[in-house]
Image (cartoon, rainbow, N blue to C red; front, side, top):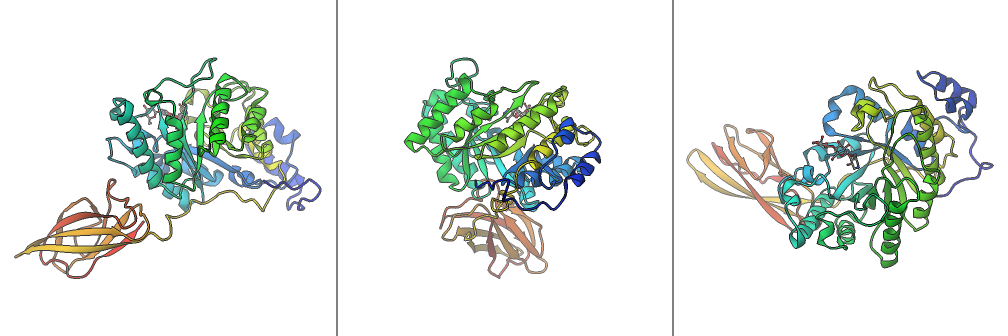
Length: 457
Ligand code: G2I
């Protein structure tokens, strides 16, 4: 990242007095808000403040929270990145082997796109939150299931994920610095690199991260991971970033920043991926130190907090987030915002604030074969992808007056009369270039005579 020196920065639009007025206007003021005002214009939201240095500021959320107005108002106002707290995990996306469910995760990605946010993907493979069927697998069967899972999930979201947590929490706690025992680890020590190579092919544009906790300083566990990343870089295993979850208590290791930097020096980006800090007298200052550490490491892309309001948190009793249960900004919020505002804006390096639409050359065609009888018919429709892979499809069929759909298989119908859109279901939306699939519907009345149109998604 190119940083301009303090002497050549653009004059700021808002003078410091305005910043102080703004800071005083919020209910709770961190001491740091007054003693260390931003040197530059005050951006008024976390996302905008982080964007000044080309970084994102994100939050974990869930699609079922979008109906909670307070949660979603804060989410949309403050954050320019989101991550699924649970909905992209293996148990959520592949509840039965080779049967995929993207209901919640698709809603999350659509929300990001509609609101100009980027998306972190969490997590392709992890020893925890595996569906029961995967927990019961081992050896080659599990290895193949893992590869299929990565291909299908990363493939489904191809082009729409800023960074994927490809492998989560594979290292053991304690002093050894080695791998954690798990069914995945027992398939062979190379499972992590196989996961990364598979993810690179499935989504060549996503940054591929290794993500873990208790790595908040230079310790045996973080050094074990450091050695793996160094090995991967030396052998060309595709790894782009390391996520530091940063579930923190009431203290912060003095070498937190130095640890980020040593990873960055290996040639990977670093990201703070699940930040939350136990509430205590120093919550605001720990949040501030973590933020400043990221800002001080050029390859630190951004920060994600693990929830929006204290009552959204998995650590609810510890009130570890930036907004209280009433949606009010806490002192920690102000300390983070002011830290973000203290950097020199770099407008030449904007953050990845949008989730791109699906790949542009996606296209499909549909052809119909009919079996008709007096008063009814069965239509079988073949959907064929064009010369690029597609992630999903919708076939639009115009029915004659008086005709009604009475049953549909292998597709979801938008209605039963007039113009009906048939969309793929979870298992048949993805087609390789030139690939095809069939769905069908039964109707009463006269069979359709016009050619259906197919739109790839
Ligand atoms: O444990 C904290 C985080 C550590 N790093 C990886 C993260 O993925 C993890 O997040 C937590 C979520 O915050 C929890 O919400 O991961 C837990 C386990 O996946 C999540 O808890 C689970 C509950 O254990 C399940 O009983 C529940 O069905 O959330 C699920 C969905 O609400």
